[in-house]
Image (spheres, rainbow, N blue to C red):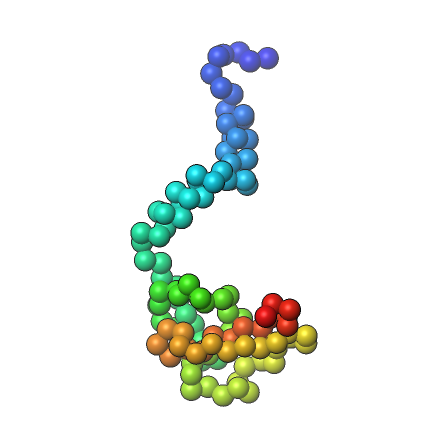
Length: 107
Ligand SMILES: [Zn+2]
């Protein structure tokens, strides 16, 4: 049913979707290189008092469940969900402690 010799637009959209959902290695590489040149900033926000600051994320930062200023007490944060183990990481940004609640198997 193709009326012209040009590629039907539907096909290219599907192709794009396919590339997005399953990007080839060269595309992942080029995107990683592109973002690697620019410093990426994240907004750190205290889960207790709302103090916020922008910081460059470090490679070793895991996804934090909570962030807390280093002067808050343990009891100011909610308890970890049952079955999860709480870990704390000092030295996040200028004054934060990173709280990670994760299953014990995650190490
Ligand atoms: Zn705080």
